[in-house]
Length: 435
Image (cartoon, rainbow, N blue to C red; front, side):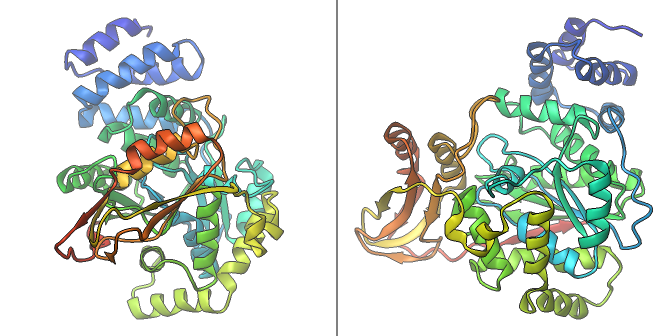
């Protein structure tokens, strides 16, 4: 059946429930280049305000999933478990987590995304490694997953192509923070991976797309429900995104921080979440004893096994292994600027949203679909909420290339930090979970 896109936009704008065939038609026609970006943008914006009912979300997600190929990983004997984050500032957890899980005996066919809005993307960070390719041919995908237990790729023209295109359009049109759009995007990619289980990191706070706990619970519950409908066990862990994760915000510098975690170092918050997520992935895969799971994860890091898997991952996907072994070979801007504390006191706030927007202005993210990311720019955040500081103490080091971009960055970064006379305790990392 043929539909009028204008009529469907109007119906969604007015709050009408669209029939399943109409939603399937939209996905099929847009993927076939018969609906222009401006019309789908209008539909996505109407969805931001009107949402989707469960009767709409199911066929929309199925259409996304069915827009291309679905992997058949039945030949993999290991438990196939993946992880996905809804997006955060400084969130590089997937990068050390995937090789840790693989070195513990899981198969991790990780399909990741690029930065959305003020949040960074795993693919953008991985591609800061010279030569690294997020595109892996099907035959190479199969052999790599079998050999080392992990592949990290993006959506392709053959695998969930509708999401690849809509994902980029949402980023450039202010249509990211929507439960149905986020959940269908994530779950269509993950269900295409033929998984035995999935871990979701659902961010909550100023730097997340859902700032309230109730909204995050709605998103998490929706995705757990989609997984259940497809007989795929899903655990959603709700984590704090009031301040950036770790010290590094950018691309190449977040790779460096991820490597430190794999070497048994790294910031405490990144280490703690990576470890907690790895333990949960083992639980999803069938390890019922939490202490055994924890020991397996610790041994993978301490022995260097997880780091070795990451080196193999980089090599198999065309990356320069020497840049991982010697982190000074990663891209890095030579110009730096240091922002300091304006007064004595305690760090009461390090606003993740403002830090994320400032990073985009600096060139570490995209303001339009066509923008090219500079992998060498970014922030090294030197304080965290609860730290005591004195006037003039460095708060953040900024690596930059353009003076004009630096000025635009500082316009918003200056207001990201709040110094108070009163001590504010450290923030909880994990806020809840839904199974």
